[in-house]
Length: 183
Image (cartoon, rainbow, N blue to C red; front, side, top):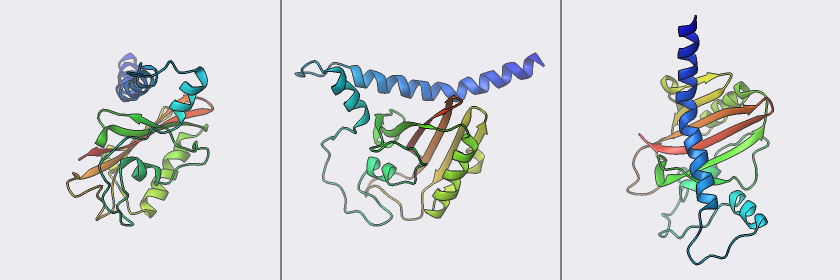
């Protein structure tokens, strides 16, 4: 009995550790001093955490219906559950493609309905679930999708998978992380 509980706790920690790392990296990026920048006011700090930062990039490829202009635009164009903030906050995510991810909290007490939301809506968009990677429980879920045929973010972009992880933070709140990763 104790072995089963210990194993369950180890699995939970193994799944939550990457998310905690992403959250800490996001916080560190938000409070890190910027060169030649004046000290931000508390309102400016909050605004920078919520508003996606504009980053200078090379001229984007011409987008087709299946190929959005960039990673952030592709992530933001995906279906998101009701209660998703607008604009959706982006974070620096070292393991993600182009190091970009969406990370946000929504009011919900049912991570299973969120899992079904993503399954239903992403399949309609042409994504295919990699069921071997799907894990869910009272703590939340982790699910991986392969993008539709012809999906690419640029001429030299690798094959990508879409990863969505949800962690129940409290009985009324769920944290959702959405990102592309190299296959």
